[in-house]
Length: 457
Length: 174
Figure 1: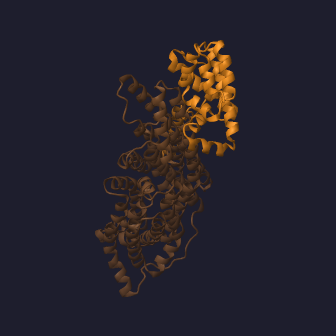
Figure 2: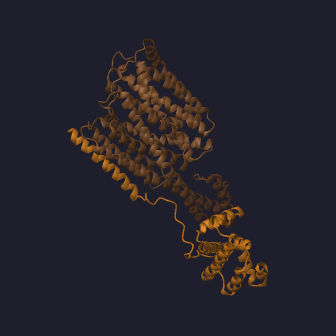
Figure 3: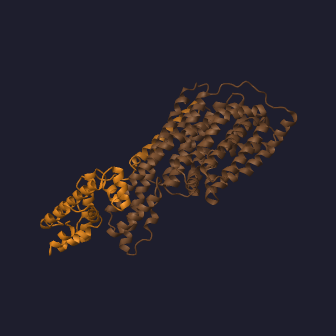
């Protein structure tokens, strides 16, 4: 690092990148809470995630151009201010439409901030390569920590707190950047010369989009399976999905041992696809069984994302524009993954819900519970199902209070467990085709990786 | 180890890990972990140890449900939920485009199958089965549904039928 580089400014720039890229995934664990509180559908709540990523994908390259024209210091400061203001609006939203609109504005601010930071970093740290490394690490750290932080905040405070906490962090990151903006305003100098923009690395960016689609689907679907399907709390789900970022860290260590970006990208795509295939083939509704697939996805994403980002940015100038392309590709991939898979798994949830109800009815009809208790239970379960239209039903409370007669109680408990097993089977199976499709996306990323010239990747 | 060898090991390791994980999950039943399929209602379901009135009544109801569901081309489970409440019944008839007469016909067919199954299982004597069949052939819809939901009342009457047979006939004949 440049010894003269002001540490607070480097930290502020890294913080800005981490904060914005965390926002891409920070709401994942809050979605079930938002889904219930704003009384919407699974497809509707997906747009809280999709809107941010879609606007980010569309705005990243224009934002990079704008940052280079008005000055990266000013662009980063304004971007962070927009990001913080829109965060407040997100927290104040009482309707899904206003939340989605505020998220879109947040993405515009975020895109402006992170592309401008990529332009500021080389001058701050004195090396373009070092700047890319800091930028990529900060982004990966933010994206990795996002879901866990979001889950903890949702459970301990509320989903609104996820957005509120971003406001002081964004402002704290903006303070040292204001000095650069002030300098730009005072001197009228835009520090970076407007160099000719080179062609983006199409194959690396296409592969990035495909892998990002698979990874976004993995995270989003796994969180929904854990919270909505298996009824884990947001903190519980946060702990479970932390396996992925933990092993992403291990993967980044592995990656350093292999200089070939092509090999890292190919191995990473295979691991992401293999991990997702494992999630598609879960043999039981058991949290521990999600760990090995997550280990593969975690290591794989670290290998493939770093290799493809390095390739997309390596030797290309200006960095902000090419950084804009990689951001655009990654977020477009997330959007494609979510939009392609949401209708599939919402349809599958509806189908599995129907099959689970049929299987559950068969369990009740064939159980050894006395007929009058059966009828009473069937009516209570029916009313619970009506109250949870379109969702994976919870039936535990329909069995309370348990009968006082020990023999009958045992039969009712056995019936409850058998019913729960059918629901678990349905919830798990409902996600299988979507995980399978996401796995396919991961494997398909091998095509652009293979097509890229060896000298390029 | 050379850089090229390290690259080969990395890719090879990734392939092995991916195949191993999928293979283990597949072998552990990963492809069939789904809700159990419901049985075809047109297939005969053997009665399980029909002992005591309550158990016989239950088996009778299940047989009747199977028979009616087979007639309507739906699962036994779907029909059971449809017959639980008036509102559920209306939703069911609307969804499958059937009227009350068709539903009544199917349920009567189901009750007749239940009588046959009870006879086969030795839970109902042929002497009782014949007049019971006659009664059930013309039973009104609401009473037919009531019989499926509470076959015990019917069988209670069948027991008393051993004595004054007229009791049951008076109750169910129009």
